[in-house]
Length: 295
Image 1 (cartoon, rainbow, N blue to C red):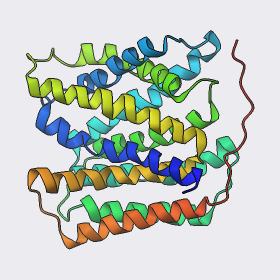
Image 2 (cartoon, rainbow, N blue to C red):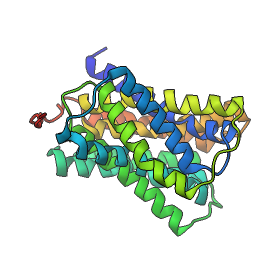
Image 3 (cartoon, helix red, strand yellow):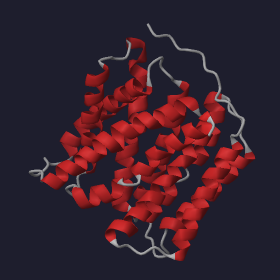
Image 4 (cartoon, helix red, strand yellow):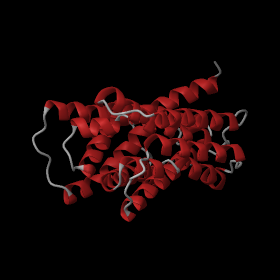
């Protein structure tokens, strides 16, 4: 197994685990607290990682870390929750799945990466696979929900590319700690002002928050940003298609939800699109970026 294959497989575990977010949120957490859940997913995990690494960003990095924290956590998670509340899950997942297509063009704009026809084809195939996997014929549409889903896709796409462009001279662990903390701090005033206090938490609630924070945020984003640093963004972004695949499989395995032949076909198409996206990047090297000032 080559080093690149190992990097791809390890990075793929992050979106595969993110697919558990829906079932954990609906089954283990209090309902109707989207901003508070996003806050408690980001800030405690970020502060815990900061205690472990004991390293703060240099002043020259503060602005960039705030931007990355907003894109990769604050805006992304807030918009995902808005879309989830206003759209059927299938519609939201299908719209946000355009993110890898955005990354192809943003990586060309910000990193000078070539636009490969095979990468575009892989992204389009993946979107089709997700649509088969989660979209239902009677899915209702909502303008604000659609806008939120698109905003989430753009936020994650820009965050992925800029996280590659703005690589600080630190480990993925430190980089994740900075971004999670920044994202959580940016969410804090909105959660306090726009949502009521949480009710008394049950054991199930604590387990849900622990999973989303320690595993679904801290651990997975360390792995994700490691992959962003080592692989082309156009190779990393399509791995996000694994998230709805995991969500559907967990719903079938744990909640007894149906799994139709169309959905099985959708899973196969998604896997094929991921393979196609990796094939498109075979032999490509991530662009060498000049090290930014670290004063």
